[in-house]
Image 1: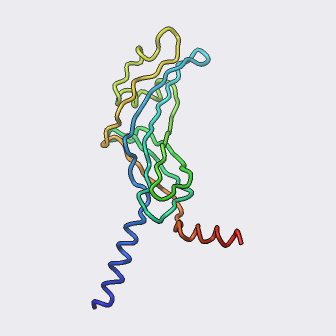
Image 2 (image 1 turned 90 degrees about the horizontal axis):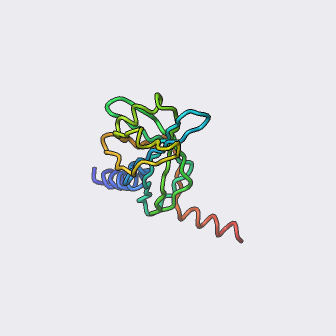
Image 3 (image 1 turned 45 degrees about the vertical axis):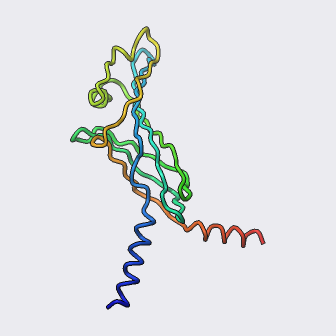
Amino acid sequence: MKRFLVPILLALVIAGCSQAPDKLYHPKAIFKAEIKDNDVYYTFYVKGIVYNNNSERVFRDIKGEVRISNGKNLTVLPFEIPPLLPFQKYTLSVEKTGKENEMKPLLDLFRIDVDRLITGGYMNFSEEMDVPSGNLDFTITNYTTENIFDIIKKGRTDEN
């Protein structure tokens, strides 16, 4: 019994250590208003830090979604991230643009006064705001992974 338990526990520890990034650290939201073709367009930006906390895994082809909700799904912001090396941080920035009727649920959620964003026909930005964790869902939907030591070994063999 013990002979089987040790490899199983070791496999679980290794699998747990190679988990893909699952959190967006310090998410911030910003709104921009601008006038184009006599219409007002609002752009909603979300930015935050994605961190690879693995010591040996490189994550590639990372795709995912940032969902903003208030109990119901308000918007889905797809993203792609370049390869993440071990212990590397990446600043993720996603955005959505639309007219007031499309953006109203987001404007309401963040209590944005549209009159303050549009002054004198100029483009204006809101203050940077924290995104409450209950209103944000960060999900990675696809990725591949490689061991950093395998990549280094392969690089050395390719040079010879």
